Amino acid sequence: MKAGSALSRVLVICGKDAAQEARRRIALASVLFFAATALTLVSFAVGPSGFAREERGQLHAALLWILLFFSTATGLPRAFVREEETGTALALRKVAPGILVLAGKTLFNFFLFLAIAAVTVPGLGILLGWDVSSPGAMAAVLFAAGYGLTVVSTFLSALVARAGQKNVLFVLVCFPLLVPLLLSSIAATVAAAAGQLAGPPLRVILAYDGAATCAAYLLAAAAWEE
Amino acid sequence: MLATTLEARELSKSFSGPPLFSNLSFSAGAGLVAVSGRNGSGKTTLLKILARLLRPGSGNVRVLEGSRELDGEERRRAVGWAGPDLAFYEDFTAQENLMFFRRAAGLPAGEQQIRERLAGVGLGAAREKRVGAYSTGMKQRLRLAFALLCDPLVLLLDEPTAGLDEPGRELLAAAVAQRRRAGPVLLASNDPRDFVAPEQVIELGR
Image 1 (spheres, each protein chain N blue to C red):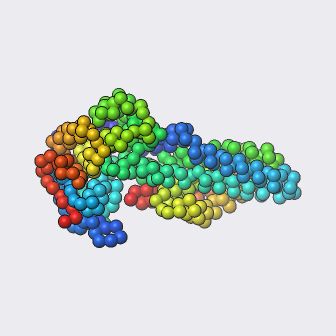
Image 2 (cartoon, rainbow over the protein chains, first blue to last red; image 1 turned 30 degrees about the horizontal axis):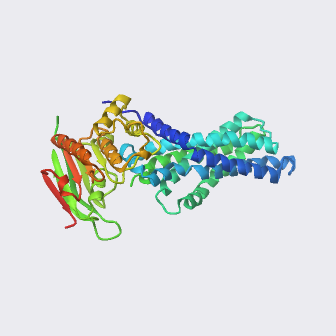
Image 3 (cartoon, rainbow over the protein chains, first blue to last red; image 1 turned 90 degrees about the vertical axis):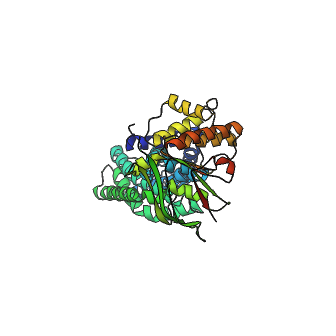
């Protein structure tokens, strides 16, 4: 009997999360609702002409990443918490090693992040009058930074899933770990909006992605398995 | 076919208190091993350690096929486990649950194959029903199907008769009788009726 490849097992786990989400729509609904609410409030508070044009780039980039961070912090911890709360974690642990479960859930969360970004970025553009001169550079920043964001937050979700006060703990642990990524993402977003692909911040993001991937790979078993 | 042996050496485990068991060693070949003991004596914990769902405080567990020790994925699939806290995705049907778990284990899972496995535990007619709508007894049957899902060499069953009706108990007894001929079956229970002529008895909490 030939065992399936690691990639196919990762896709199976990601597909299971997607099928669950398609049936219940809890994570997607709460995350998109949070993003839409925050976006509306920000647009009313700041508006398209609330600041001088040269100041708007920084402001819009910071708002975008605040929105993305808190939107993901609302939905991503569900990845492992739900498995623990419903008792399905034991069955999952029995059939698949921690690294494959983590990879499958990270992949699903990455798609969730892209869905949030697909709503948030055009939303900010329309409501705040934000022109992004280089959509390609913006997409590269979103992909690279979104990857780091989802790897770290999914891994932390596995870590806190069995703790008390898990939602508070998740945000408290997430924040210091994600600050370097978020600061670089803001700098790279400002550059992308101005039509440039900023080298130094993007390099920091890619290095962060690499370090986060290695850490998650090495610690997945300890985080997920009892 | 090579003989399968489950070996436990000097296992100890405690949860912030006195040890549930310490320096527990045994070796089990084909046959039934009865794991008995009062409530809280560590039966569930022992079976979870053997299934690698819990780490022991000290000691180790080996699964041998002939003289070769199984490890990694081979070891994971070689040990089937079911216990009272094993739960399934309630939004999914029984068929979807088993297909998912078998594929996540890296094994092929055709619809026909899963259908037959569910029919084998008496859930053929309810295979398209959401697990959330299952009764306690039906979930217990599904747990048995899960334990057998990867065609394990070693079978670990924790309180497998809880919530089962008489036909369910007969079905379980038939499955145990068949499996114990091929490899070790460890069955933990408080009900002595569950142990039919065991080859070995492990009594915890004495």
